[in-house]
Structure formats: C-alpha cells, structure tokens
Length: 445
Image (cartoon, rainbow, N blue to C red; front, side):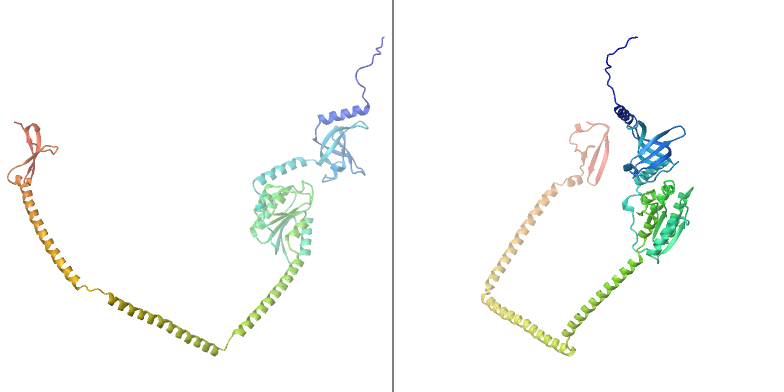
C-alpha cells in the first residue's frame, strides 16, 4: 500500500466557519414562514427572551423569540398551547443546534380568522361603512343610555358602575344578548336593531369584556356591522381591551378602549353638569344686572329730557305759528315778484308789438288771387280731361265689339290675325260685346 503525501488543495474550515456557512445556507433556503405546533419546555429568561420547543406528533424543533419581538405578542404561551409562529430557520453556531428564530406568534387558528377579518374589513370599508363623514357626534347631554351586552357579562357591571359614578341621573336600558357562542352575532345584530326601532335612548353602547380573537369573533360579523351603521342613534363600541379591534369598532360612531371607557364617553359627569349650570347662572345674573343698570341709566336720561305736557304743547304751538308765518312770507314774496315781472314784460310787449293791418290786407288780396288762379287752372284741366276721355272712348275695343265685331284668340290666348294661325279640328275663343264663346274649326281657307 502506498500513501500520497501531497497536500490537498481544498481549504480546511473551522467549526465556527462551518456552522456560519450552514446558518447562511438555511436562512437563504427557508425564508420567513408560518409553522404550527405545540409549545413545550417554555422558559422566559431574565433578559426577556423566550425559549421553548415547538413540536407535533412526529418531530420537534428548538425555538427562540428575542425580547424585541416578544414584547409585541398579545399573549404569553403556556405549556401545551397550540400556536403558529412566523420564524426564520437558522443554526445556533456556538452549539451547532438547528433552531428557528420566531418573529411573531399567534394562537393556532388565528391566522385564518385574521385573514377573514381583513377581508371583511376591506369589503365594508369599500362599501363606505367606515367613512369618517358618516360618523355622528355624541349628544352633549344624554338622558338615556342603551347597552347591548350579556346580562351576565362583567362588562355590564363595569358600565353600570361607571354610569352610576359619573351620572346617576341617567336612565339605562339593557338590550340583552349573548356575546359569545353560536348565533351570537345574529342576536347582537337583532338587539341593536331593536334599540334602533324603539328609539328610547340617546346613545347606544355595544360592549363586552376582553378575550381571545375567537371570543370576540361575534363582533366581526357583517350583519353586526350593518346593524351598527344603520342604527338611529350614535353607537359607541367598547369591545375587548385597548389592544383588541373588531369590525364593530370600525363601524361604530366612536370606539372606546374598554367598556368602562365607553360609559365615560357616553355621558357627561353630573359634577360637570352642575358646574356648567352654576357658571351659566352666574353669567345670566351678571348679564341681567348689567341690562338693568343700562336700562336705569337710559330711563334717567329720558327723565331729564321729558318736559311738562302743557309746556311741550305751548312750545309746539309757538313753533307752528312761526312756521305758518314763514310759509306765508315765503309764498307771498315770489308771487308779488312774479306779478311785477309780468307787468314789466307786458309793457315791453305792447311797446314792441308791430302793426299788422296793412299786412293782413295784402295777405287777403293774395289769398283771393290764389283762389281765383287755382279755380281757373282747375277748370282748364277738367276741360282737357273731358276731351281726352272722349278720344279714349273712341279707341275703346268694347265699342267696336258693340258694333258686331269679335276678337278671336287661340288656346294660348294670342289674338288671331291671319288664317295661317288657324288649324282644322281645333278650337278658338271668341270675345263678343256681351260675353265669350268657344267654337271649333272644320276647315281653313
């Protein structure tokens, strides 16, 4: 047997380099993905990191969730919990252990519920149920508050306690309904519709305590959302805790972090009412006092200006006499002045008026001569007209016709003057002194 002492050209890796290369290979080959399993050996370190094993019936894998990610989880897993984790497959280099780094964790089955929640939310948002313009303002002073919840729910006790503490004068109407379980969503929607139909409260609170997404799922129903949106009075949604969001929260006019917060938003504290009323009373009294003072000062001013009625009448009588005198003088002076001016103008007119007697005689003579000339010319024209009429009468064709002659015309109305214009077997028109006739032509010579 022979041995080859030549050195191998391939590089020699350290264990650390090998584990780093394997870790990079795993991370590139397996991107972030959701993995389901059962929690086992859960440990919460002092640093805040979570360490546990995720397993199923046939295998298991180590898992770590660092503090920066664990602080956003909405629950702390316990031994035996069914969970789904979003993790990155990697390798822990110092020990060479294959593990997953968890980025997010949720209870098993929550993924499909969350997707259904997102789909319904997008659908109702596109339909306009969540638009800010349709949100109604809460009444400033609510006298009756309606509550839609289960009579056995702790949320009801919290709401009633808050209302009793803040506004004991407010009336409460309970519309009982299951808030969890089969057909709960339909019953919640029916309770909201009942409250809207009765119209006996000023604001409606829809509430229940906190819980898992499965516990709150009845409030993620489309029928509940439309019932809230179509309710006649403003609706406050107080479902779950501060971190819980449901479709009912988005459809409501106002979302409260908790049922207690919903009660605090629904009513104004009695102390605030009383304080506001006291302030209003003070303002009204101050305004009335100011108005009375102003009225008294105005009355004093009128009193100083007010005179005795007899003296006021005498003063007005003297003023009237003065006005009458002024009016008389005002009318008389222009009239006198106008008379003087008229007399002056009449004198000037008389002095400058011409003597028209001779002119009138001349005008009369001219009128006589004109009339005589016109009559003479008219007589001459009439004589000339009579002579022309006699001549015209001699040329009148009608007179010729009256002596027994006739005018012959063809069918086109042209006068026939020669036999060549006539044709046998045709007709012509004869115009006589007292009428007309149509005759046929047998032959033409």
